[in-house]
Length: 254
Image (cartoon, rainbow, N blue to C red):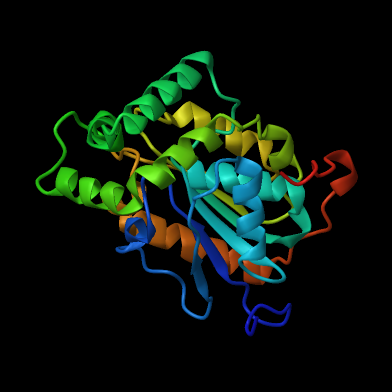
């Protein structure tokens, strides 16, 4: 693709969270000069989602992911660390799923199968915001985005969640600038999750956003925009070193 070669600024591959789409990033100001590709999460397997991410551009890129989107970026990093020139993740978890999460995902999938997608949207809504009552208009905005994603993609995303694995080993393979963003009032992915990520990725920078919840691009778009500007400055200033791919061989394609 034009603009994706090594001599050109690397594109940004931007990956949303579960029940989110490109509207999640509508208030974020992306750095000028870098093409932006918005990924979609429609496959029922993290590996397949990661392959979609990797095939969305040719050559090196910078990945930006929130929640499930960051988990997909972790898997892409496991498979092709040499292609990452930068990584920004937020509101996420690098750990393997917990038993209670498997149970919750099965329950939500059953509700959607029974035609109760709206119930699932309402179940997920409180965790998106730092307080029990979202600010005026925010709840409806989230509902519109979730309904635009739709029940079919939601079921694929739930199935993909169950295929996750611990990503700390993949993070250790990163040889590019890494920025980790965490809302201090994120009920789904608390700050400690992000400290684990920052400790695993060599030289990663952790930025905690006071008072923010899960949907950082909506709740703190200026912070996200500044983090991306700073990350791209690092990318331009310090090309990535060769990753130690032999320590973390890529798994077979899903």
